[in-house]
Amino acid sequence: MASHPLAPGESSSSNPPDSPPEPGWQGIASDWASDREVFKQVPWGKAMMWIFLLSDTFIFTCFLTGYMSVRMTITTAWPNPSEVFALTIAGKEIPLILIAIMTFVLISSSGTMAMAVNFAYRRDRAKTAALMLATAALGVAFVGMQAFEWTKLIAEGVRPWGNPMGAAQFGASFFMITGFHGLHVSIGALYLSIVALKVMRGDYERSGNYQNVEIAGLYWHFVDLVWVFIFAFFYLW
Amino acid sequence: MAHAQGQQHPISLYLKIWGLLFVLSTLSYLVDYFQFHGYLRWSLIITFMLLKAGLIVSIFMHMAWERLTMVYAILLPPLCLLVLVGLMATEADYVFLSRVISFGQ
Figure 1 (cartoon, one colour):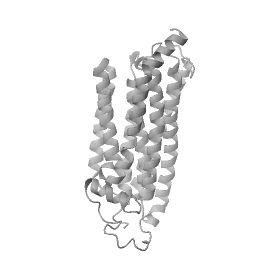
Figure 2: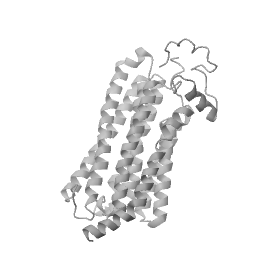
Figure 3: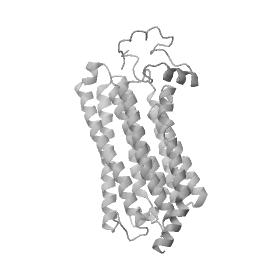
């Protein structure tokens, strides 16, 4: 999107595409009103990733809203997540500890990803690829812990249609929400590995454009963002 | 154009935000650990959640430095979801009573 030829008549505009935005609502109005592309100076890949993430926001919110509806309307008690997700470590039962560790792992992966984007724009290929692979590795660790958690709950008899701890809808909400999120993490780890490979191979050095690293980063931060909401509403509530 | 692309912020900024997110996550975990209940628990959970979400979106996802048109195009549509949440919450009493009447306890 960086440089497409100007259409006739476009060049005479008082506000050419590369100009800095006017401040506030006037800038927004002129961006939308000028009968040209709206997201000026925003690379297409980035704008499209944001719009995809917007649609994903709707999907995850629909899941969480379904969970909320169920939880507000059940006639039996909801299982206490603090106890369901407790682990016994060294003879002591610590509530929710695995979920806390998973949260820290995912936040750390967001930190390494943010730094990878920074190094990409400085054209430090080795550091970018290393940090992206570290991010992907943390993502895999997260999915591994999630697999452990699923195994534990399935062994305890939690099923999508019922469980021994309380309201039958607990299993369906849990498997649906964390499963869909885990799928996002898994795909993200694969996606980041592919982009890291391309960084190492020098693809972006040749095109002189490291935007793809930032776009992959947007996806990854979004996965972390969704976890913030799942952690608050499903595990802590 | 190649040099103008991308945003440059010092690494220390990301490390600071990372640290803040760690602190906020620890605080929200402690809400559960100390077994706070009722409105105190819910308000603390929501506060920490919104702070974390804000830091991730504005700093890590660079929303703080994007063009305003972009920011509003992405951040305004999710407000529709609040309508859905509101509708479902208002209906909850009715659904609960239906469950009691139709399915017994």
